Image (tube, rainbow, N blue to C red; front, side, top):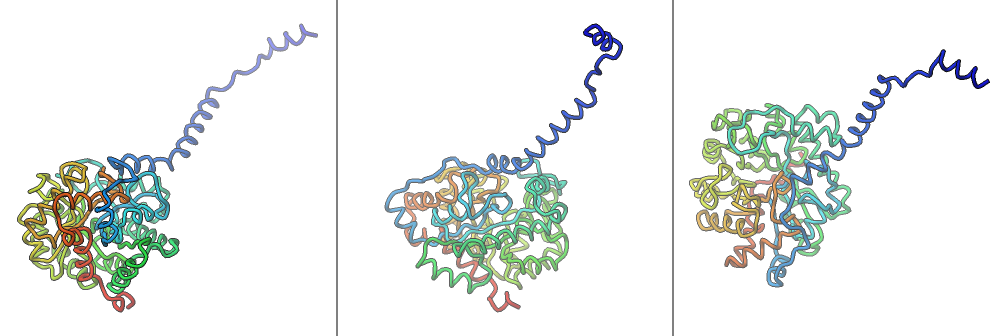
Length: 412
């Protein structure tokens, strides 16, 4: 019987496993691994891009702590909405979420919206880039399909995210839309320190997609600050980092006029020199540089010239000093304070504020829970209590109250 079985195997040997089947299984396995890894890509990129030199808890002197508790702290610029973190949960990475803002004594945070950005590093010579970087982040973050190819839809979706955070916060977070919202919040903040407010801004008006009516649409969704350019030229004019270095286009002038009519604060952070000059000539309300540095304190292609400091004083606006090394020279408190002192000396203490650029793919000395370190740094540099109150938030409040629409206008 055994011989018969052996003879049968010789006549009809078992077939070897197909190489094609093995290859198919291997490719399927690789494909499944890639699918499993996709949700990790945005988180990994976030962790690498938005880091801090040191992490909390942050220790400061009792004098600085007491002063910081009494301040209305306002930061003009954070790109937290670009990332897939839950803003209502305290995260172990990145810079901004509601619990850390409250912990850091931040009363008002500008949530700025990024819709397109170049993949190349550096601050000069950018052309209108292929939409790879943010599109890739959007797709791997599983944003709605409508956002994959539309810059406007990306902006609208980020607006939705902030309003959703407000709805789900149980009253600890609110979005400021009108003057009355801000004035009532200031009074309530004096009673309950464990709450925070935010407002929406746009970093680069390329998300208008060349249509002035989209300003109104974004306004209806809560946008109250807008920068005409980001890292490249737009239909509105030239970027500080673009190739043309041109000023405002006719369309850009129309857009600024419409922004002022609605109550949208003009942000010139990434504007070309010529655009800054022309914008300040036509602006009838104070403007801001929501996140920048000044060349007199640190000579960088990213920073603005001294000639604009006097013009900002004349305009009544505010320069928000950034927290990262390319803006101030080093990611430390001393460098931030040095730039603040420079602006306060040359433009006046009424025209300088905070523009962290938290979560803007930068490394900062601390996250939003460590804002007390800056109060301590300003004290140590010799600023008075009144000056610190202005720098840490009162200047921003003044400009916003001059720019924001009335509640009646918003409800129309």
